Amino acid sequence: MTRALTTDQRRHLNALAASQDGVVSRDQLIGAGLSDRHGHDRVVAGRWRRILDGVYLTHTGRIGFRERCWATLLHCGEGATLCRSTAARLLGLEHPPSPRIQVVVPHARRVAAPSWMEVSRQRRPLSWGGSPARTPAEVTALDLCDETEDVDTVIGLITSAARLQRGTGHLRRELARRRTVRHRAVLQDLLVTRGIESVLEHRYVRGVVRAHGLPIPRMQHTDVVEGRRIRSDAVFEEYGTRVELDGRLHEALTDDDVWRDDWVAVDSGHLTLRLRYRHVVGRPCRSAALTAGAIRRGGWAGRPLPCGPGCTVNSR
Image 1 (tube, rainbow, N blue to C red):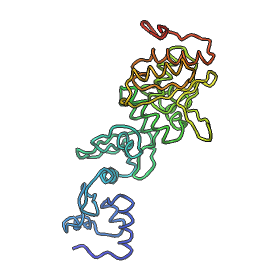
Image 2: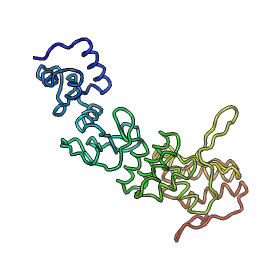
Image 3: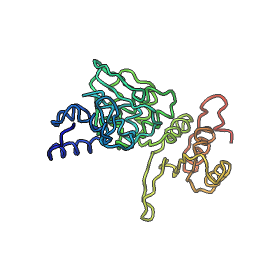
Image 4: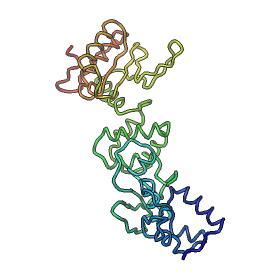
C-alpha cells in the first residue's frame, strides 16, 4: 500500500509532473523520497497510466506526442536529446512528421526501444535546448537535409530554420562545422544569398535570374508608400521593377490570365510582376524573358543569356 504523500512531496511531484507534461520516472519518484513502487501502485489503483517500464503518466488521459517525447527522454536517460523529425515538430520547422519519436543518445549507451521510438547514437557531444530537450534548429535542419534527396525539401527546411532564428548565422556556423554534408552546394548558395526566405524565392534567383544572366535583385525589400509599409519579394531598384512571388498553386485567375496581366504591366510601364510557383519552376525561361522585358523598360541595356539548349528566353 502506498503511503500518503507529505505536503512537500505532493508539491514537488505536482511541480515535476507539470514541467514534463504529466510524465515522471521511477527514478524521479525515488529522488523525491517516494517508494520505488509508488508509480506501480498508482497504475494499479487506476489513477495513473504506464507508458514504459518505470515511466508513468500521472493521470489517465491520452498519451499524446509530447507525453511520448518526455517518456522517451526519461527512458533513454541523461544526455538523451530529441532529434530530426521529432525536434522539427517541437521547433515548428516545416517538415512532415515521423510516426516514431526520434532520439539520439551518447554513443556508449544501449537502449531497448519500443516500436514507436527510434534511437540513434552519436559520438560527438550532443547540443540541445528547450523543454523537452531537442536539437537546436540549425542542427535539426541540417540533419534532415542529409536524409532527403529532394532539393525543394532542403530549401524549405533551411528557410524555415532561418525564419525561426531570424537569420542564418547559426546555420552557416553549423554547416562549416560539418565535414560531410549532403547538398552542400545548394546549402552554401542558399545561406549566402541575402534575404531569401522561401523555396520559391530561391528558385527565382537561381533558376530564373542567375541561369539567364540577369542582374541580381534585392530580396525582401520594404518601402513606405503613402504611409504604408510595402514589402516586395524581389526588387530591381536600378530598373524600377518589383517582383511578387506567389507560392499558391490554385487561384481564381488562370495561368494565362497572369501571363497576360504581367505583359500588359510591362508594356504600359507599370513594372510590378506577379509570378506563381508554376511560372518560376515550370517555365523559368519564360519567367526570365518577362523579367528581362521589365528591367529593359527601366533602363537595363543587357540581354538575357540562354540557360541551355532549347531555352526560349529570347524567343518573344
